[in-house]
Length: 255
Image (cartoon, rainbow, N blue to C red):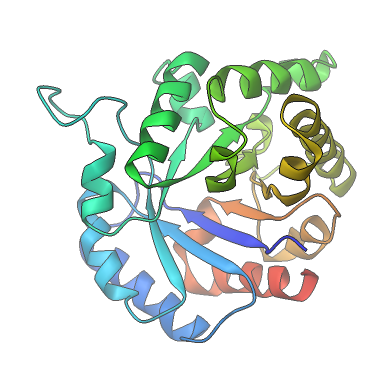
């Protein structure tokens, strides 16, 4: 049985105090015991340590939203994976559609980042997903195949134990439009089949595949009840305690 995993991607939001208050609020609401599901929050780089301190003693882990593929050195403006490990990060989000589309990250770059993050001891939330035009052209599976093949190039079956896949249809991110339960399940089932074909059935069976794209309390029950949806990567709804906690509760109920 795959353990559900809900992660909050705060993106380029909050101030230090707002982030700390949010983290403390989540920790208080979710408590210190085993939730039956995994929960993580991924704040902006400047607030990682403060948020890590705010959730100390709770079941919440902390992740970053990106890292670079080189070892520490002369790379102005970048953040190395060992630095994230040093301050207590467990996770790093890689391949998010905003970085692919806005910052021009290619599958090859994401593959190098993934390998570097894993070798440093981070666990990776690897994002894949199609644009609206690609879905309308019935290219969803072709796009997912390309992104998975490229972004996981060189990653072994053993390393896959420290990866979570996040399926994020780009047309549903921040738009208020959510994939239907059936659309989400179909994409997740394709990804699980891809893993079985390109790795092995065991990797496919244990791999957690999150759904991301306008997840909120009102649609979380339906999405998280799908057999191949193993959690959620939450954007806007992760910025308020009263919006995020119900999603975690939906994951607990559906496990």
